[in-house]
Amino acid sequence: MDPAEIEAGRQRWAGRYAAAPIRDADFTTLSGEEVEPVYGPPEGVEVPGFERVGWPGEFPYTRGLYPTGYRGRSWTIRQFAGFGNARQTNERYKMILGAGGGGLSVAFDMPTLMGRDSDDPHAIGEVGHCGVAVDSAADMEVLFDGIDLAKTTTSMTISGPAVPIFCMYLVAAERQGADVGRLDGTLQTDIFKEYIAQKEWIFAPEPHLRLIGDLMEYCAANIPRYKPLSVSGYHIREAGATAAQELAFTLADGFAYVELGLSRGLDVNEFAPGLSFFFDAHVDFFEEIAKFRAARRIWARWLRDRYGATDPRAQWLRFHTQTAGVSLTAQQPYNNVVRTAVEALSAVLGGTNSLHTNALDETLALPTDASAEIALRTQQVLMEETGVANVADPLGGSWYVEALTDKVEAAAEEIFARIEALGGDGTMTTGVLRGIEDGWFTAAIADSAFTYQQALEKGAKRIVGVNCHTGTVTTDLEILRVSHEVEREQRRVLGERRAGRDAAAVEGALARMVEASRTDANLLPPMLDAVRAEATLGEICDALRNVWGSYREPARF
Image (tube, one colour):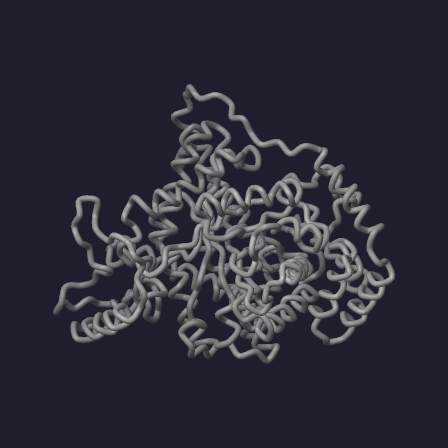
């Protein structure tokens, strides 16, 4: 790019920066030296390929979505939490918010993730152990008791039964007296990554996509600030994918959801801003930064050139990041504090919009209050002490970072071409569905995981405390243990709620929902009515199982 074009871009950035609100904060170094809000090439210097780097707040958004970087608004500290019953988790949420957390992220237990009630035979021994048990809208009320949903952004990490859980969230907000149309938050809902990596589905892909399409329509029409889809690469990476695979599989899923919205007649400029992303921040510091920067650039280009998005907000890739759970070790667990800090820093330098930092004991159990506080303080140290929020994309222009960004992007584009070829009809959706059906995604991830494991066992890749530097003076941790009394109490309360509700109202509402499921009607309104009548999650999902059946992954050898 010639110097005149670079200077024109600098001036455009300067105008946007001057018009944007800035936080009341000290933007100097620890020694008191002033720093500029952004840095770029010296004036008059020609920089080949600079149009791929650009300036913050300008297409292709390699350097971030906003001209101010974190000077305008810091990333949201959004700690993922949930265990036991709704009351116990409510206490943890109040601790997180009271200690400076900026939003909530709900972790559900396995029965909830699978659309089962706590008294379902499949739920025995699992209630409250990997997240919070939520059986009905009454549990959701307790979960957010004393927390103003109208003022708190809430993320919910659930996909298979995401839509009925969302309905319970809406009903809990109604019962608080909130203006539901102004709620703000994110629902994961990403069913593609379940078939690819996490394996928590209920139905075959087509019924799930019908529900997701209904959700997208409902939110666009009634709750415009709410993000009905968080396309998740985190679980893909945790299953063993490489950085390029995580990026490509995730964005391919995102493109398929764009095609879903377009197939429903929605305007891409209106629904695309409601799509968000969820990435893993692994321990290879610079590769992760490159991955985040490439993600923004790819998404912006595809949304503009392939799907016709003209509104900049529809071209923006907004993403949440969680540090890598798979990088945590049971051996020498205090080392996990260091790993988490490095991973969190890569997310920040990559421009994440919100962040969860894992606790040091999460490889052994759900975090204790003390370890959860350390995880929270890790973000606060980065935010308040290190100066990393003073300059937008401070690594922009680094020869290594820019080359690595280009390399990750090129690898992702090669994978997109392979996925499209699987479908053969020019759409990403068909390619993704064919890749799921044929086991192509799971095989690719398994190959990458196997290659990495071989490198570990040969010592070519090292993990401190595991295959090198194994001596230690540390002792076993005290970990959080969820009592089996939680399950017994949850089952007892659920039984009392069933006995105390209007059974005829529940049956009637479920029947109307099933009737709607056999038509093209949007399922959200009748499902909300069932939730208001205190129909349980299992009852709603079972009613739809009776219509759509259950999905079982084909055996592959």
